[in-house]
Amino acid sequence: MIQRLAVIGGGLIGGSVVRAARKAGAAASIAVGDVNPAVVARVAELGIADLSTADLSQAVKGADLVIFAVPVLAMNQALKAALPGLAPGAILSDVGSVKGAVADALALLAPEGAFVIPGHPIAGTEQSGPDAGFAELFENRWTILTPLSDAPDYLAAVDKLSAFWTAIGANVELMDARHHDLVLAVTSHLPHLIAYNIVGTAADLEEVTQAEVMKYSAGGFRDFTRIAASDPVMWRDIFIANKDAVLEILGRFTEDLQALSRAIRWGEADKLEELFTRTREIRRGVIAAGQESAEPNFGRDRK
Ligand code: NAP
Image (cartoon, rainbow, N blue to C red; front, top):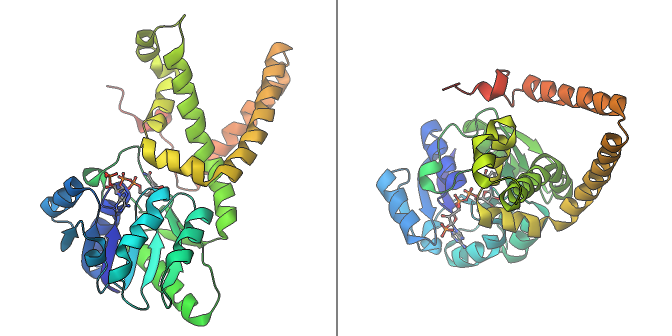
């Protein structure tokens, strides 16, 4: 059990971590630190932490586990502000969607004796802020930890952090940070880029009005709009921090798209059918892995 949990960033993910920790009894006391005074006030109002403060060094005082839940490019600024209050031997982790760049930033600034263990829960929604958080967000989802050492005392800290995530409902996997960034470039970053692009393209069309795009969106477009409604600052940071992996996967995607475009141009029906049959299997695999409902149309109410 964690004696004192400090979460820096009281938004969707930070707010969910503290709610889940409290529900599971995974931390004896909980502090939240955030630079945004409105977030500090809202966290206090919601009563989801024992302390809510804009003073990050105060928030981390006495904490044996500190989790940074701020946008990826704000991690080092948040750690700098928290530094004066950090307890010796504390575990410093995060929930950032990119691991290589964040691991480098945290490891560079962390004080001697702290255990930096980068992490990423593969769970979320398109919403932001403390009101968007909920205790069940991590249930049956994966949290990836990207350890930086195999020293015995470091591995004991990894076990402690894994036990924390397990206590709040997640399954834990250990992975190399650069591999994480490549995997997530395929499963999360590229899908967001495609969604932002297709929604942007539709918004800029001249021959089809925006009113028509919205009216007839049930044909597929509306599913992209959910992803494209995700937080602009968070996603700006992800693409900048995971540039190499995203560009590598985007290169592959562009080649495959060119091949599809050629198949359509030349009426290569078999080629199209073969691909669409294979991709259906992937959806079945996602459902079998317990990461999606088998209900048609995401189980959406027809109203
Ligand atoms: P969020 O709801 O916007 O919350 C982030 C909070 O951090 C905001 O209250 C923000 O204040 C605050 N903040 C920004 N810079 C700060 C700093 N330097 N020091 C202290 N607080 C600071 O964002 P989120 O969705 O929880 O995302 C947080 C992290 O989780 C990101 O790194 C993201 O990549 C990762 N993540 C997100 C998801 C998802 O689906 N959303 C899933 C997995 C991982 P302001 O309101 O003033 O900006």
